[in-house]
Length: 261
Image 1 (cartoon, one colour):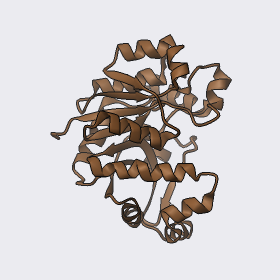
Image 2 (cartoon, rainbow, N blue to C red; image 1 turned 90 degrees about the vertical axis):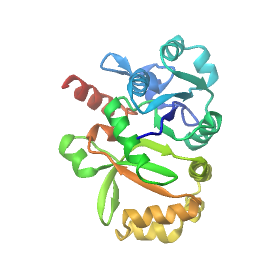
Image 3 (cartoon, helix red, strand yellow; image 1 turned 135 degrees about the horizontal axis):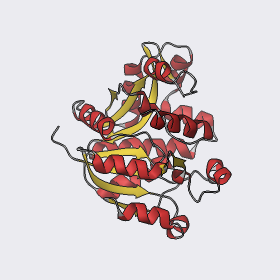
Image 4 (cartoon, one colour; image 1 turned 45 degrees about the horizontal axis):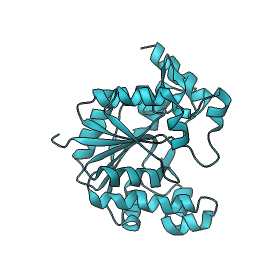
């Protein structure tokens, strides 16, 4: 793999803030303690130790939080990342980060992805680089996740030819790939108007998915045409890739995994 990735780590909160952070009395949800280190610290440590990533941007939390939270500032000082304010949602923040970097390829991940490892990052970046697409998604076969963490409830994408969990790992491989987060920004703006979301994505796609007839390749092909850029996926064999920490149950699972080695 010749390409060196920059990275954008999304650490903003959705409008209204994070119930999880409020429950824990934290300034930002990415500061949740996971076996002795914050989730954010673990993410940036993994990225800085990866052979595939050369620094990047932490997008979020809000400036009012960032300026008043020494812990976040200290984490950044010890890393190769710089802070930037988030936009109005995850996709808009991702697009803003990609545009500020103005360098490709760009790895996108979340600041609460506490189980990231350098090996996992390198596996995804290598797989993404081999696809020849504008945007790459990291997917984990659901049977791998279920076998490792049978007690964990995960969101499952159910296609006719297989079931998958997301990994919160995405790659924008070139400037054409910016069409992806721009498209999802439109969907986020219509998240309270489901039929507008369906219109953007395509009614036929939704119907086929709900009926269990949609294959993964067909879904990505349809979305590629809707977005105006090509999308592919890299399969990851490590179930840890499917676990982020945005709830107490996920934190407990992550702690258990880390403590078990």
